[in-house]
Image 1 (cartoon, rainbow, N blue to C red):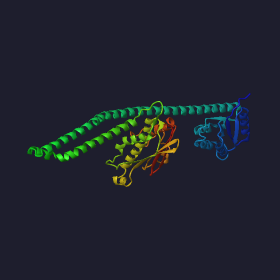
Image 2 (image 1 turned 60 degrees about the vertical axis):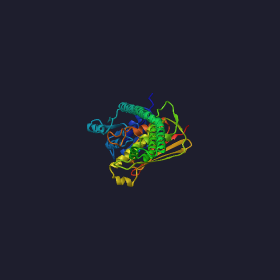
Image 3 (image 1 turned 45 degrees about the vertical axis):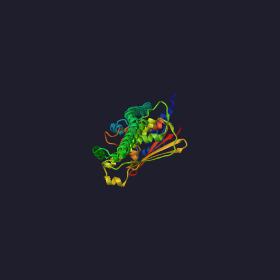
Image 4 (image 1 turned 180 degrees about the horizontal axis):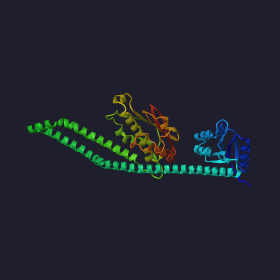
Length: 424
């Protein structure tokens, strides 16, 4: 009793006798058989149904077996199908040429039924094992890539979080000290001014040397300016405290479970941290950041991870503007202000949508199709790892169940859209 096979074998030969012999042998062995009497018909047939193996005659009218094999190997859809040539016993030159074109084997005429079946079964099994191995390798590669991204992301978040949290802590200590002493200092100054005023009232005609010193220090101006100076110092300290708060918000350590978080805080803290890069410099005017936040509730998420995504997208936009500045004059850049727009809204009652758009150079379709690929970067060596957006996609899609996409028009700009489930 023959073993039942489900594989389809395509026989390509213009000789009916050969077709009958091979077709009957394969059918008896349990294979499905398809027949083509020319190379043209074979090429048409594989477009509709891919065989597991092709038995291909060399000499045929129209395009011969060599040309048919060449076209099959040039087609990405059929290039991996094993091809066994059918040649004359003494035709060594054609056998060599067939193998050079990509054939896996050959059978000789006149046919030996057992030999044909043995070769067909062997190469179908090899083809099946190869495909299975390729699938396993692809899966292992994907798993390894995901593990690498996860490891890199975790390491980057840990290192960045520790660094930023440490800086925020170091800032917070002296700021707290200054804040706690500034209020008493203001009170002491007011007490001293009060004492001077009282002295001037009680002794309206002071010694000439004192009068000279009062004029030298411009006491009247000092009494007006010193309180304002102390108030300016207080405002500066408040700004430093806000920066420290933003650093702590940005570097929030992620726990094993998601926590409620106001995404606006994450975006604002990221923008504040990048503010030094947004300022005007010798090569370009300032980059303007426009924000438009809707009434968004807190969502359950990993705040530190989302902040990393915002940082990657915003920093990439700034990098792009810096590259543009290297190729344009200051006047040209002033004529077209560089703008980053950050918008957030509820796309649906259950979905928060964040759009980050720039009016820069945009991307070609080829680059746009690959920007989330592992290790892909358009930056020069040493300026980009190709991990930022790949990690961002993992954070949004795998860790938060959301989506991230990019839409870009060459010469007009790029927009990233992030959608996150709104589950509070």
